[in-house]
Image: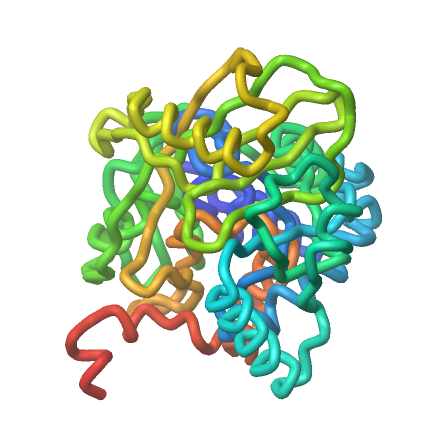
Length: 373
């Protein structure tokens, strides 16, 4: 039996970030990953680093995270392939443009200055070749994108340098609490610690259930496509209001297409399956956005399973039993929050105090009992 100070269940980016910050605070930390680090949501991410279009409840945490991304090498000794070329939400009607203008006005009134509205001229300067049907956009100039696999390597290496032990192939079979703390049975053996962080992603509610908690959670299998290399012409990440599309060009020239195109999944086996009809619709949306890319060959497609809550906000809170903490359910937009959410989780685990930035993310809001309270 191994006895660290904290056991982190789940080796995705949020688990690794929490482990890194805890270890740098002096804790002995072991990460238990059921398959391999970054197998699902983290490894299948479009790696958007955005404040653009965030739920206002996420904005305080997102702003801190963006500051951290702009100096991410200070945290993990690598820039994670992050480039702040901006993000755009393009619109095709006056009504959509007015809705974006009003949304950004409400953000500005709350003190946020990360987004502006731009018209056709500036839009076409930023994205040459954009379909002329798009008349404007919401624009966040300091946003951008990173390389998901480089980010995983960097966070894993930084955590290990800080003394974190990472065990792969260690799916959790049971979770038991006693006055001495927590005992976790896994395929790789038994582990005990006074505190446990549930960072199990789409399986987060199953881990919570092992501790006697019911936290509603569904899942999805967002798919990604990568094309052959093209001449570099696109800098910002582009999405379309009302459509499931995220469109960017990597530093290698490939187009990376995602944004919520859904495949099929099985939580019990951890397997995903591509939906080629949905992929075709995503490719068509990309050609609609940028007519010049029509006919570009797609070279790779993949997907991973991620947790999805009813309100699309994460669960980041203490559990109902002493020493248990949850961080999961990011619903497809957790990548940008990774450095700040991990730091806030470490503070919560260490002090027992829920930081103000995490207070909207209690699990109680998802239950009938919590909603009625």
